[in-house]
Length: 233
Ligand SMILES: C[S@@+](CC[C@H](N)C(=O)[O-])C[C@H]1O[C@@H](n2cnc3c(N)ncnc32)[C@H](O)[C@@H]1O
Image (cartoon, rainbow, N blue to C red; front, top):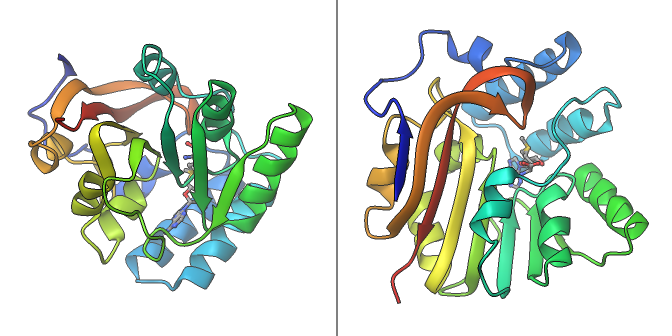
């Protein structure tokens, strides 16, 4: 197990709305801020979908479209199996996993993001299975997945009306892997040691809470959490 970074700090000093939109262009900032506000106010799925559709329709959207480095290293020595990429966005991680032999369901409520993911996959000659659905309505199943990925889904994790941690834990097969990366601190980011506590019945293989370049805020440092854990067999 590897622990890095400051594990005792409570939140960040910057206001949540500023922190959560760090590193994005002004137009994107207003889109992301609008989304954060809508989520906090308990927006319905249709509103969230519209907001994310707007974000993905923006040709200036600036994020790292390469597969996550955390994910690449987390699965390097694993036998491919059944995986679900929750909040797949434009599919950077789903496509990578399919290329590595995993059977992947990519789930996202944004039909624009999913359409872009399919287009990109087709350009690469990769076939991906996608589901356009709100994660609160998607059936995660019971002991169904060898791998669950949750990248930059801290907003959903916290604002869901359901118990996200319980659903994730329950959906993992014995021996299955849970890989999470997202912003930390602020109103909807992961809090200090939150994931360690929420998944204390899993074997933690990697945990860090650091300032680093986030895939969703390139070009500068943000506080992010990276987490890899395995369910016991
Ligand atoms: C910051 S993006 C991350 C995308 C992808 N995981 C990545 O790292 O590239 C957040 C994604 O979550 C999706 N999303 C947000 N809330 C959701 C929900 N309740 N159900 C399903 N997808 C959701 C958005 O449409 C968007 O694609």
